[in-house]
Amino acid sequence: MNAPQPLASTLGRDPAGEQVLSAERLSFAYAKAGPTFEDVSIGIGRREIVCLLGGSGCGKSTLLRVLAGLETARAGAVRFLGQPLHQPHPRSALVFQQASLLPWLNVFDNASFGLDFKHQPAIDAAARKARVQEALAAVGLAGREQAWPAELSGGQAQRVALARALAREPELLFADEPFSALDAITRAEMQRLLVEVVHRWHAAVLLVTHDIDEAILVADRILLMAGKPGHIHREWAVDIPHPREDHPAAVTTLRMQVLTALRATAEGAAATLAPAPNDS
Ligand SMILES: Nc1ncnc2c1ncn2[C@@H]1O[C@H](COP(=O)(O)OP(=O)(O)OP(=O)(O)O)[C@@H](O)[C@H]1O
Image 1: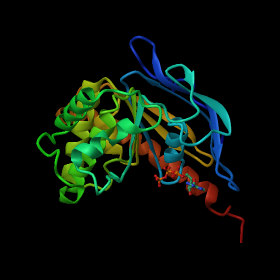
Image 2 (image 1 turned 45 degrees about the horizontal axis):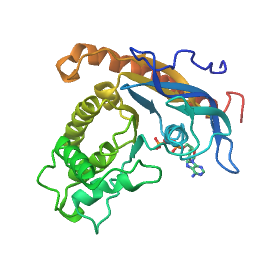
Image 3 (image 1 turned 180 degrees about the horizontal axis):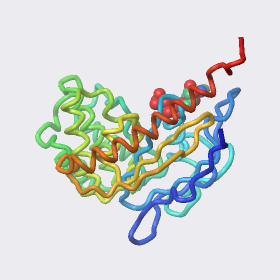
């Protein structure tokens, strides 16, 4: 098999040509382990939703953590709004699979919690209250400010986590499989909500998922990660208008393309693991 070639075109599309995040030739390895990914270049345009799709263990979450400033690359550089990134940026926010709400804080205080993180610009109490209320209203939780986490469903808890991220007014939202623990109906609702609120907030998103349908429903661009060490294997620009459920033919065509590529990467990986025909 030929060595994977880095894609030249993994640069964010943006009408103004601006990128909120850019990374060049990133490599990463955990201590005492081989490289997780190598030579990954990626750009995310302002307001762009980019989905990072790939099989289990190919390094998607690790790449997200490096791009978010939670881990340090072994080689290469990450720039956020044009500046070198060495730690999580105050204009970025994270949402994970678990909502991770603090059980002793009510919904309002959980949603405002992200405003106390390191390097977050100080804002006065009135602005803080307005921001948090606006974020909670955007995720459909107006009137639930005094509720406790134990009183929420999984979907509602994830809405609070999304509001906590939005209250930071992020330029870029990092989301690592944020809906994978939810039931199918709630997941579909949350996917629609994510697109709606990030468009309203003018935020870009990097969404890690292994759900092809999720990627196709929300992404402006899909990056397929594969291999060991991981690399960006293919990408698709998704120009289907929202809501994408209204365009089933275009969705099905893209789904087949992505699925075929994903299967090919899985078969490629299996082929490298399978014993050669002459092995006994
Ligand atoms: N903290 C860690 N220390 C050592 N190895 C790790 C650590 N976290 C992840 N790995 C390994 O790095 C590789 C990539 O893991 P990662 O979680 O980034 O993959 P992924 O594509 O997000 O997988 P999944 O879709 O299953 O969540 C895996 O082999 C994993 O076992």
